[in-house]
Image (cartoon, rainbow, N blue to C red; front, side, top):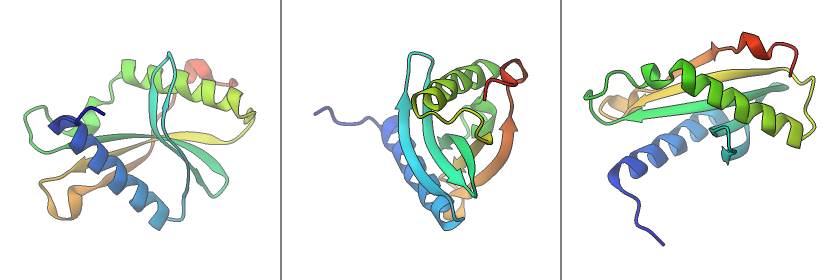
Amino acid sequence: METPNRQQRVGRAGEEQAALYLQQQGCTVIARNFRTRHGEIDLIVRDQGVLVFVEIKTCSSDAFGRPESWVTPLKQRRIAGAALTWIHLHHCEGQDCRFDVIAIDLRRPEGGLQHIRNAFWMPDMEGRF
């Protein structure tokens, strides 16, 4: 088994913190690190009947700007493509869903967690959920 590098350890720490936070908010974690040819979804949770696809960005320095800014339009399209695959595989068509981003700054007290609900939507996918 390969030893994770620093970036992978930071990412995993952020994912764990985000999952714990979401569970404390009453969400149920359904899946972690769902990968397809389209991209990856860090967490899939259910929040009061809404299917939520969560992108988690974690930083330990300010070298690359704020972590939420890393969810570019290209990254959004990849997440949405992976979400469509998950929806079809699990027969969740017609289910209410949303895309959230959780940004974590490990330098700040308590991880500096920022939860951005409905962070983006893919208008070209309207009606496909």
